[in-house]
Image (tube, rainbow, N blue to C red):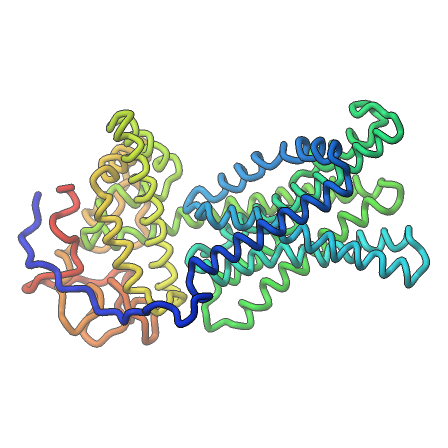
Length: 498
């Protein structure tokens, strides 16, 4: 059913033009080019150092063996990040930083520190042990955490919580482990060649190194660095005013990462390797399982946030009733993408599936934005960002809404919940309220749903947003009867007339 005709929406608020940067080196393209050049040069230097250390043949053998766990680890972290996947550019930067810049800094710093300790103590063997158990964990975890810090500072919109920290940390550490494994496996192959040992025998150093580093512990470096990622993830969840917490949490995560790394390296250096298996089975494996559970639990919380926050936009007419359920269920999301691909055929099916994926990502970002607003963690651009997301969703509603409606019907619970027109009929409803007409627009207000002279929902003063009274009696505002048009309503028609 079509909505009543509405006058054209008023123009968007005027935003002061930022203009071009005052200096050429401040341009975004120049910064991106400098970063790419830095990582490329680091990669060339580290490859030259590793090839010089292992020899050409050893380098090629190490490269072929070290690349085996990389796709599995990347796929695992992408699987954890299915609710709102991180942009590929962030993942590519993280992997390149770990494999190139972090590995180069670590090799140079570790070698310098080990030689300095050996010169001071006149004990080369003790210097190697001390370098592996003390110097290496501090240096390596610090340079890997630098990638997380850069994404946290300069891609803040993409860094929203614990899962994002885990994924960025894991991908960075995967790149670092890839380069380090080339070095270790290449040196092991050179040792076998020098001693005339078959590379696949039980007495082969290459086979032993491959078993320990690739088969038993491909997750070792990601596990260490994930602690730093968790620290940054909790810092991202903290409010801007909690500055001490936002500083101490990443530092605490980094210290835990260093401690885990030192325990792992030290266990392989003492007691003839017996302590290594004790640490592996009694400490590392349980820690890996615990962190995996924590990450999956955080992902489920993100899905619950989507289901709880989006019904407000159903009440305002931007979303249809089945969408909060479909958007907050991984199986329903997959069904929606499959439906779009099948319905629109081979040619248009890919475009429709891409539109559905973009719709899922935008709706998830909208839910997270509203959750941050309710907790007082949204920035000053909350209203502008919310409006951008809503307009982007509206532009993609054509292929997305039929797909999401189909997914909701397929994945709905066996026993439907009580129906309310504004909320989610496919899942539990936290605090239902009666349905009213859309909120009228009053020129003195910001967003829809605000009584006059009241700030946004979840904010003592500023900023403001859609549907947030200062002291609400329920989860959503109580509407009023409309006698003037609402420019914050969907642009042209009702949700059902896509």
